[in-house]
Image (tube, helix red, strand yellow):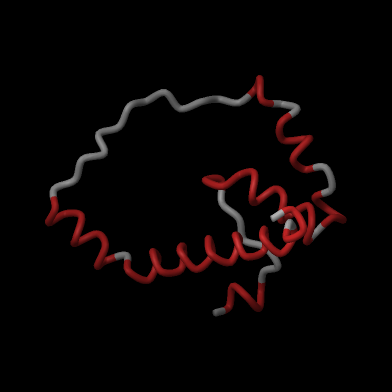
Length: 94
């Protein structure tokens, strides 16, 4: 995939701590102390308090899964790659 060739790290806000740890290790020139900087400003974070109806009819869910099959596969690949990078960085801690 082009992701592996073109990007050293692709993270996710869903996995903020993992993303920041990998960025700090793989690209220290730009991300040294990124975790410290990120968490030093949490009082200014805006939390989304809007409740959402997460229920989907089964047929709608199946349609969306089939329509976005490539995007879902890409997302899962990127997430797996991020966790492999995290394990490589912290292998001595496991």
